[in-house]
Image 1: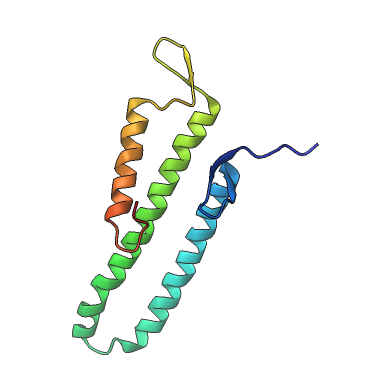
Image 2: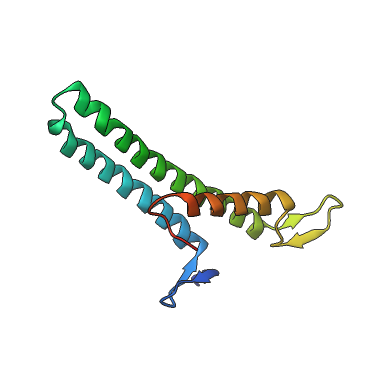
Length: 125
């Protein structure tokens, strides 16, 4: 018998997203971004003829890479919080608080959401 996936949330189009789907999407996005970054560098490389060209283009490429890493990092941290929640949390007294987030988890989640809002090209909420 196939285990049914637990739905974490529904997309705007109504598609149900499970934890496994989320992890898969994080991985696929990471691989796709890496390919895109390599293609971008290979496309730009012939355009760099002088030191001034490199000085002009390097900050742009660096920013592109930072955005990619920051987005992946935020998604991974959120997935880790969800995974801990699925295992069940216990408060300091040993009481099971279920999917409840600790104060530290809530703070981390809010910080990551704020960072994503500040990144150009990321989802605005």
